[in-house]
Image (tube, rainbow, N blue to C red; front, side, top):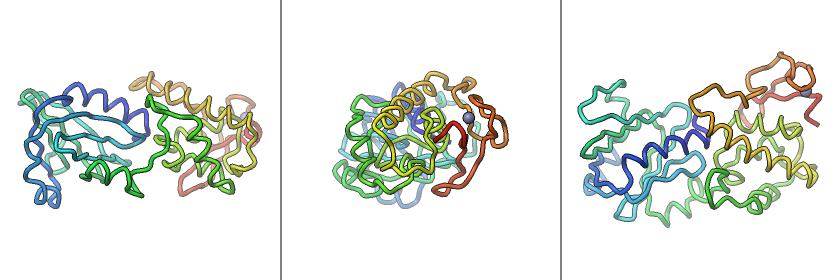
Length: 253
Ligand SMILES: [Zn+2]
C-alpha cells in the first residue's frame, strides 16, 4: 500500500535514473498515447513525491501525475534485462540510454499543465507533506481545524489536511498520540494536537528509515483481539471512513 514514505522512497530511486535525462516515454494508456505523440521524446526536469503522488516534471511544462493506489508498482530495469511482470500490465514506460523504468497497474496516470494541477480540486491543493522540506505545521493545524466536527481518524486520511497519510499511518499515529479515532477534531486539546504532530513526523521518518526491513514501529495495525503493547487490553477494530481502523479503548482517550 503506497503511503507517503513508500512514495518518497520510490521517488529517490526514480530520480537517480530519470532526473535530467532525455527519455522516450511510451504511454500504454490509449487516451494518453493518442493525445500526446509529441511527448514521446522529452527531458525530465524533476521527479518529486508529494503525499501519495508521483509528479514527473517534463521540459515542456507538463507534469505527469501517477498514483499507485493499492495495486500499482514501479520497476527499474537495465536495458535488455528481462521484465518480471507482463508488458500488458504496464501503464507508462520511460526509456533512457541505459534503463527502462516502468510503472505497472497504476490506476491513475494523468498529464497536467503545472497550473492546471495546482488548481485541480481532486489532485491539486494537497496539505503539507511531512517528508518534504516545505512542510508547515501551521498549515497542517489550520487545515485540520477547518472542519472541527469531523472525526480525527477521518480527517487524517484527507490528503488536503496532510498529504501522505494512509491507513497504517493514521492508526499508528493515533495510537502513539493516545487519541481515540472517533474523537471530534474540535475536542482535541492543544497538547494533544502537538502530540499528534510529533508522532506524525516521527512515524513518517521511521517508516522511511526501515524501508524494506521489519517495520517495528507498527504496533496495533491488524492486531485486533491481541493485547495492547502498552496496557494489555484487547485491540478493537471498526470501520471508519470506509477503512478498517484499530484502536486500544483503554490507552486512546
Ligand atoms: Zn492500551
